[in-house]
Length: 458
Image (cartoon, rainbow, N blue to C red):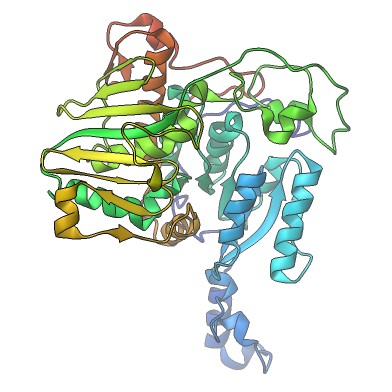
């Protein structure tokens, strides 16, 4: 049976022996082959000249030490991620899978141009990527509705995963992703790259080191939630090699093809975007507040909303305020200084406050400016450091800065906050059981149905 039509029965089973170790592949590694061959002396004739590049000299990384990377679903955001990963000398990008031919051709051209060859392969079936034994890790930047399932399939195939956010469409999906990473011992990095940027790191340092006194309130900027349930007008489906529409839909409910969907205008549609677009920004800003509050292993226990935002409270009494912004560049009053740029967060204590955003400025309360001075670092939202952290952990098998457990708690916080807005009432969450307290209606929304054969159970 073709893999394109093969039904899925996805279970997260214990890893096989050795599944956790980087570089444990079938056969003999290049390094092992060279070492054993040298040991037998004249029994085997060696070439008199071995290129320095092959041995890792002159600044090159030996092939045996390179991380072999594949891509799944790389549109504009994924291509940006790849652009900061390609220069890493110990990473070799070898293949792209995308259901849209135009996108896979763009990515192949990126890789071939960078390496000066024609070696990057391309296809539309992700199983061909996942079955390759030479691939260590995958970059996943599909539409949101594919993130969780693609990540689980990749980790089950023994690949480490860098996944763009939001990392799932529901609480159940992010739980399943986290469980898969833990059970298979894979390295996982959520693409919430602001944890790897120095201005956000410094703001968290001030919150955690006592400069602000006792923390009492945290502000996370988010989009004003919205969602739509309509279908765009049906259009003739393109040839499958140009765009495999059925595979593009994947676990989402069927609907007729319209080119606007595959051009990025799937955003806002309930079937393709989880939690009314809340995690699209909240995955960053709520995550940063979780970090600053030392709450990576928990989440707020109650949530309610009004027209200005969603309000959460942690068990330690700290308040989380998710401020609605009309647009990504909308008015940030009264809580934010407009100069801090997009995606601002603000941490308030009884002895001062700090705020920062994507332009790199560290805004401080007046008393802290006198003692700490003004700070401004290089602006931007670069994922370079975040990718480097992922690759370092692929080698060391350490946890990434936005590992599966960090992602799990910050994403569940986002879904719970959006649900308070959707239900228009106060809800209570048990952060240990990860269920809503005495609330059957809320608990029914922990998961949603998925389309066969792309459904999965963990």
